[in-house]
Length: 307
Image 1 (cartoon, one colour):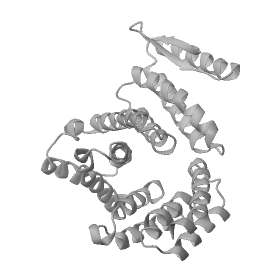
Image 2: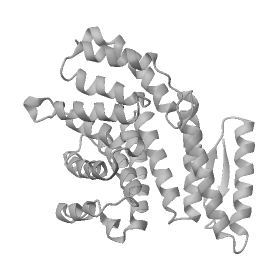
Image 3: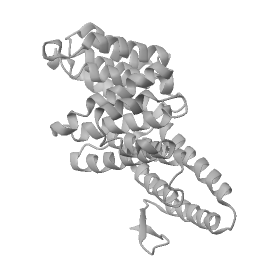
Image 4: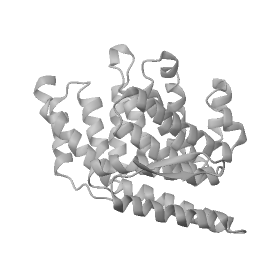
């Protein structure tokens, strides 16, 4: 069952609910939202209200201590954000929030490849739209030549960095979902270019997130096959340093991607044990840290079979 909300073109959006409380909250939200969008001369109020709600939705998800609750709630949140974007199609903040939430959902919770591709396509679509609002030349960023792409990335600045970061992370999840397609894998260099440029502008952004991605990219292959694990190691360590050790997924990824690749059992176990002992509740990192601890347990449990 679900709650049917009709758009202005008459087509329904169905919002699933699991209990009466969720149904009640969704009905209240849409009554409020419908009232706001029908009031004449209130576009500024609507924009403020929708941005505030989008921020609150993202905040509540990121600070969940129960991953199962987050996994069940996110689809409803995504539909709500779709509805908000429908009436505010050029709101950069909304588009970035939707891109980030779809990216997180596809990367953290979706294992089925077909479904992951659908969510990842949606994430990168919203990310491109957000960047396009900033820079009209960027609307075709996924289709332009590499020379044009490099020129565009070279003009990145502090104002456009958040949109580029949303695009880079969404693109990385899209590549993961399409990893069996060599045409998709060939786009890795473009994601790397985005993250490298971000590091030159503000390496602290999102707790050193660009370093974490660069660490992953550098450890995709062993040295004999063209990988650069020692460069990856530096990126992982810098990511941990910039987050002051609060982003536990950085340590878990370091253990999984570098320590296992290099068969460094001592480093592997140390990083994972530190993760399990660490505090997980930090602003906007609680959910990812909780999942990191679950993954750390799994990696430790399988260590004897791996090493």
